[in-house]
Image 1 (tube, rainbow, N blue to C red):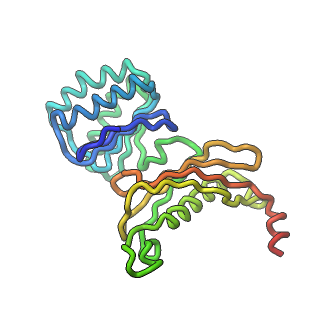
Image 2: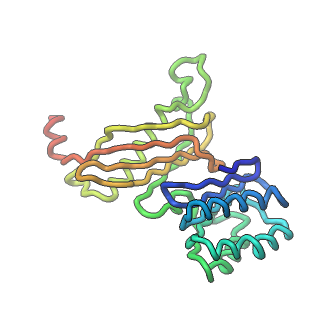
Image 3: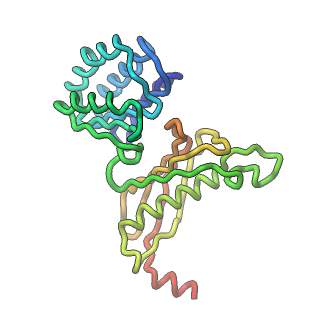
Length: 244
């Protein structure tokens, strides 16, 4: 992974994609080096997708734009990349610039503009945002503990989004799903009032067992937690009988 105060670039193995997240304005080597690193990742892993998160993006310096078009893009065209995905809000001040890039790049790649990372991952994905409240923090356990998001809350949110994801694909008059396992890695601290996006992806289904990969991002697009999850498809009649 390449990670500086200006940009983060990494290979997403499960998506076979390069993820590039701009954090703040930069130019020269601070702008070009992360893209050079991305090119190295392309050569190593042969991914099909390049994802650029412009949430905290900026208008590029003229010299860097010239370098991008004359040196970086030609290498991309000759690479394994087939699709470029820009994560950008509809009201972003960068929209005109990104639309221009879409038109220019569209001759060589499939190019899409999406509002969230979840959309860039393709089908069988659902995302939902949550705002961290006091009752979501470990200080709710004991007052002397800090007001930081609890792992148990992340587990709950991950189950909620995953359940909603699969419910859209089953006959809800006949079946429900119940959670069986969640294996989570809590990677970053999250403070009170931060907004977290939980992204649930259905990976496989083996008869009644449904498997998910789940990621949670903060408002800066930084991964704060990831998990694998298993849910089991249950006939509603059986559940009702057990509960009666």
